[in-house]
Amino acid sequence: MTQIISYKQIEDAEGFRPESGMNFRTNNKNYSIVLMSVRDDAPYEDKISEDGKIIYYVGHNLNKRYCDGKDPYTVDQPLFFPSGKLTQNGKFAKAANYFKDELQKPEKVRVYQKIKKGLWSFNGVFDLVDVSQENSNNRKVHIFKLVLTNESVEDFQNEDGYLPEDNRIIPGHIQIEVYKRDKGQCVKCGSKDHIHLDHIIPFSKGGTSKDAKNIQLLCRRHNLKKSDKVGG
Ligand SMILES: [Zn+2]
Image (cartoon, rainbow, N blue to C red; front, top):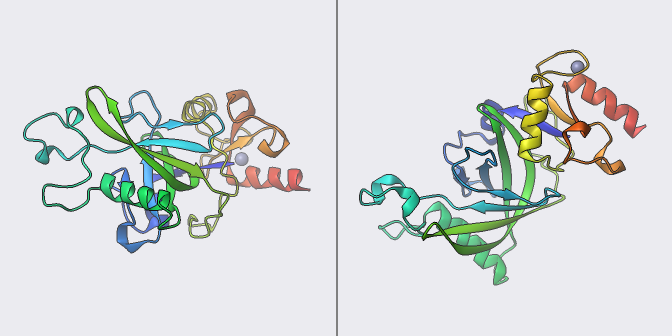
């Protein structure tokens, strides 16, 4: 299941407030963090494959103050600041290129996806395997390719020490649909605490993530009850 978490839980799990979407090894971590959104009003057109295993993450714009008064959305996304230091795009691109040149293992990237204001899901640990430059509305943007790993995320836990086990991604629009339909509460008891997106027919038994009919909201207690039963 995918756990729905608050921004505060991301902050607690990571030990800092990810203010921007791209966080390359912030605070000397040995992995990176990206925040993404696939909602219609999202600032960048990030894409997730149907099965949730591949993400195409759009690089971020240069800060306005470096854009000579132009709209950042019309300026090429640079790899370097005027000072010559790498931007976040530059750091991620360097890691992707080093991986492609077999100079390093793929960079590990934890992906958090915004469902709506203040609500996030943890999509799993991804490998950063590629970067390309593409033209988008007459300017150049970077597209980073991330592939879901099977790695567990020992470090990620909320205040209950709960670890999400299943990284199979439910598409953002399905998450939003389910969240609205179930009114943000457990369908069994109405609790709003520790809400999870639950596959009614488990993913492992062929249940789909792509149809809201197979997804429901459960509180942690009912979610655990259910996995006991399913797990036997
Ligand atoms: Zn419940």
